[in-house]
Image (cartoon, rainbow over all chains, first blue to last red; front, side, top):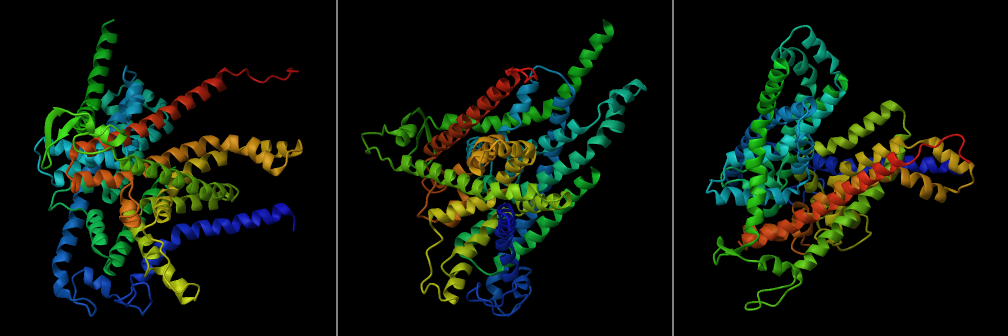
Length: 275
Length: 310
């Protein structure tokens, strides 16, 4: 075999190792969430669905279910908070982000390049800096930390993500269509409703989905600005991990994994098809 | 004249409608908190948490070396934590680059449909919850974790190795969660690499190493630098990874900041620490943007190569 043949063979082996590195740890969680060993969760001891049963509050053989009831209720509350925050924050930031993207792309004004640079700031800002800045801000204003402070906090950085996704879509768009619409006598609002909006809609939906996922997953900023009874799912799991690792975390993690992979695949698939 | 006037008005109203809400929101809830944090970092910490509204420069003094001589000696512990954070972030950048660079070359040589599939597979983990991905490494690295169980089961070691709560574990965890950030920019410039240039270099008698150093590396450098910065920034201020995989032994600046807010309750000092993190990030970005625009200008100013150059 020639030297370059060996080299490309080596590269392929490396590629497989690369994907193993990315996916093996995730697969491990899924596999061991069905492990029946209650003492050491990393030694396989037969198949069970008990951990899933536990987190959904059904009686199971393995755990003292009396001990677990409270925790299940907290888990549900955390899931509900996460969904609520993600829904509100992603909707608001989709509107704001799209508005800025449209203004920057369609109008010439003095602060245009400022806006364009400024929209990257919240993304670049390290999470912890934004988190504690928001904490100081809310506390010094005397605001009670709650689910609403989390929603506001998430919007500050989600707007940037929506802005970038929508801007990319507008850049791909043919602006002659808007001109044609104006030439044919449509007023600006009609042009926006009938021409611009349908054209940028895939970008808006994609940006909103991205914002939703990022909001669901945010840990650092939420950690600082969540009130006592407004824990979200990632903060709840972080707390569980710090108290000690229990096998039911595997089951929760697996469900989250399936959920986020489904949402992300749907989003990426839609984007690929629309192109 | 009239028409142009109304057009201008219309535009101004449309702009106000589009930008008014978001600008107000970001002004109050993004810039506002940053300004208040800046102010806090120059205030005196109160006795039982809280602040006293006096100008006070010793929050920064505690970090950089002018301590409050009445109560304490200057302790370089904070500088040491800061230096360690920079070191671990640099290690993260180096290791993730070393992992992603060859992978980018491998993927860029695949047929089109496979390329798309592979890039999809690399971006997918970005959407998987961060805490879930880190949890996987806790399970792998713990003394009773998967790797130790496997090694002991195979009889390679008879005592669990200490892998978790080390600097290595922290770097590994950060590399794992930031791989998509490094891969995508590096891949973008590897993909653009003109193979004709590489062949030309070989034809002109350059060896493998020379070709890599003189042709391939300079041409992929923008992606490498971009990826490095995108990975460095979240690594520097990270506190979730060191708190789960570093424990009390490997403390980074993020953990120090968290402590000031949630246990030590010295908010002004915590605010000063995060100002330092923010300043580092901003300086880094400024240098990067400067460099990029200078390069662009250099490219634009360079004379077009013409056929009759001797």
